[in-house]
Length: 455
Image (cartoon, rainbow, N blue to C red; front, side, top):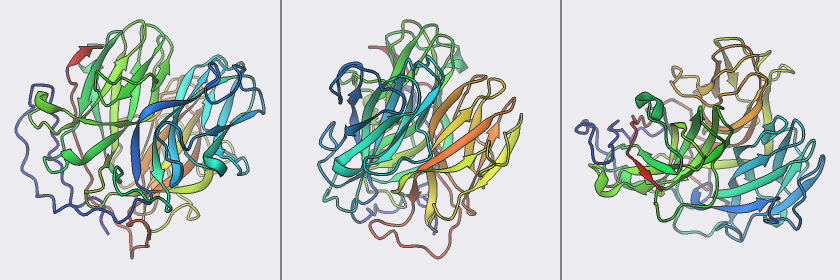
């Protein structure tokens, strides 16, 4: 079995109105071969707000969520999520001005609360984390607050199909790509001004581009001149959603994972079908923006894409404080390799969907997770400040031994990793086990900044 062996990239990105050069010669992509059935496939949605405890959205009062309290949030039938046939949803969850250090855990309603966290935070912090969560009884998820009082906001951005789904279109599989930086405004020393947005994308081949429906990206804001938030969406300036992707305070470097619907670039790119996304700065000042691409979702026509398999609930595989997964805190310039427990994987598991938490590093640092079969990429997953307790969702490909590596740039930090589910290479709905598991070429786009526009 190979992963994406048939999808060979041109490794070119087209800037708006400017081509970086002719496409490289590549092997032809075989005829499209859709995976049978929607089980484990993903449907992207325009971001929609399902919960805001400040405004009585999803709740009946404006009271913040207290210590040890929870909300059973109705998800199915709202924001484009179907009444039935949904396995899991992706929520962007924001915690606003908590009164103490703590965490929020999101898990299926009707299930026991797991030993896991979804959003970790310090007192007074406002920030977001992407969460993949299985739906519980009644199509609900439980939002539990461990300590203090905190307002919570949740926006749905898409959903995965269950084996009961009767959908026949508008879904697709996931493909891990060679983690690549497709935007970094620092390279031109041109931060994104307040009220402006820019578009960025990746050109794979003319055969692949028309089938890309969403990007899995890690978005990082660097040195913002004031507090605010970024919104990531498909870049259509006539359809900007009223939601946030990444919240930040002045001067702080903050990342957040995002699954963002794409649109075709159109006449502004050499290949009009090049998939692009938009990033809008809604703060009162300028900010540098970095975007790292880690995966794509297609329209169920590309070969060898993967399907999501939800675990019953978040499952902890690493806690350096207890020696689970990694024996101790990761030192400066230290790399540790984690073998995924066999209780989580099948022989077809290709990637993990996790929540990764940095627990009070001794100095501001950068953490990177990647497939242990490859060299460390020049991207980041978390950028925690000294003493910060902060989480970020990660899509992490695993190697032939079901392992991945973690690197800490400076100082020392403890780490916690909880797994929400896995990406499986076997066709759905059978998820049949293959004979063996081998590495194969992956998509490897390159990126440059596209032109900025005013909102």
